[in-house]
Image (cartoon, rainbow, N blue to C red):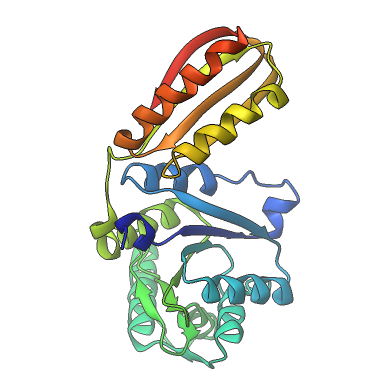
Length: 277
């Protein structure tokens, strides 16, 4: 079996009305792309969903059935607009339960907070009891450590063998938790330096003219992907197309050579070549 075909696809789900309303700008998508890219991995898909339980449940159910490795940020707190934890349980068809290790971690955090404020720790106080809801996860969930404030995230395994890793929406917590997941569970898939994009800027051309060449390259080199990124108002190149191939370096080199050779008869005007690791 081709090792690349065995590598899992990585997905991202971002939960929160505040993103869809524009009250907060999403920072997770570019950061997750960066974290994966530093490890030679790629994000295959991303999805945004508001704080609507039915929609969240449907999105999670699809993700669990996909077999993909999915990161989900947001909605795991204990306020009325936090629906991700019960939606995850509904998507899995399992009950919610207070995770004993999560309970201990949350209590340790509450003790730290009380100490920092110079107050006595009162575990039976109603607000402290309510905070334990942050450790109520789908039955069978596994914890994700949170180095920022000890309150953990959690992960659930889907029927197709993939998993969803649930983190808070706060970047200061979510990003190190995602890094921990990658470095702990998927290090064997790391392949930094084994993915490359190579392209050339084509000035003033139409995509339709170049489509036959793109199809010819993909047919001759099925191990790479051909891409075409048009722009109409670039400050340096004006109207242009960034046309190239991406894949492993050993596959990119001959595919790109054929691309340039087969573009030759069109008499095109070119800008620079670009190589992206």
